[in-house]
Image 1 (cartoon, one colour):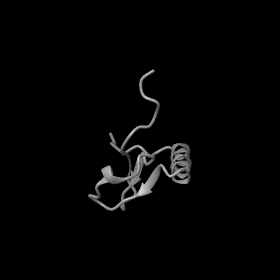
Image 2: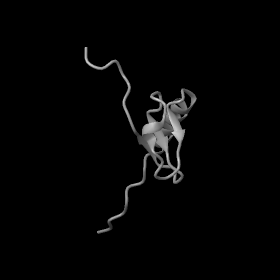
Image 3: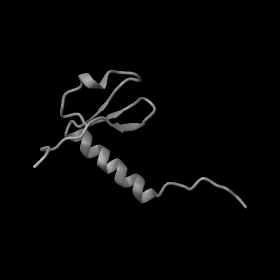
Length: 66
């Protein structure tokens, strides 16, 4: 039996790139340095991209509780 690593779905990759592009255009995704204090970023920033290309959600936005 072969235990190969599953390949990511190309369609999923394209959707992720589109999502990240939209976040960048709205100012919700910014590039940061490794170990940068993301708590000092503006509230509109919800995602950060590290130098290795990793994107991480750092906060949620929304109206809160109804």
